Picture 1: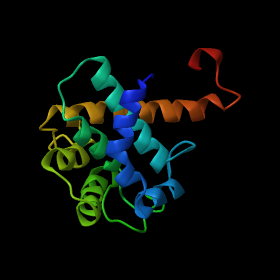
Picture 2 (picture 1 turned 180 degrees about the vertical axis):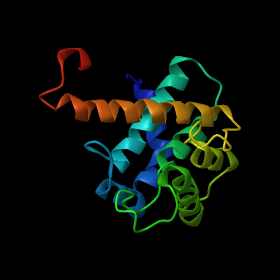
Picture 3 (picture 1 turned 90 degrees about the horizontal axis):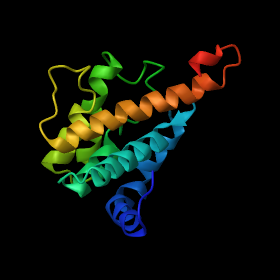
Picture 4 (picture 1 turned 135 degrees about the vertical axis):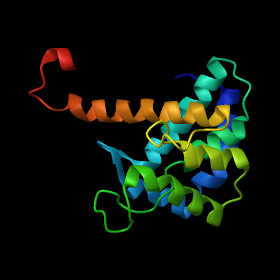
Length: 163
């Protein structure tokens, strides 16, 4: 993934407010997929979403795309323990992330849609309503798979064809 210097500067300008916030920084304490923490995962989803949108020359609200992607998993608990939330995590965490985002930042409609609907198609009734949401949802799946396969690669007994 290669971004031009200008594109990197734009990404930074859109993301600095969020990435400098102490609660967003605290996402680095939580494991997300495999050996990736939640903050790194969210940054990767934002970077890939932005990169794909530029590569395909998509006419999108780039700032909302980046910000929504950065906050899509802005829930501040370890979902593996099951003690800090009710219900099936995959179905409930988007609402928690959106609630946290609204509490700590000014969130527009597209950013809210990205956060709330990023688990589609698993959450079949919560379908993205804008192009930005579809892209972030797809990149979230891509990054999740990539992160999990990176963990699997470290296991010695896996047959060569599975690597």
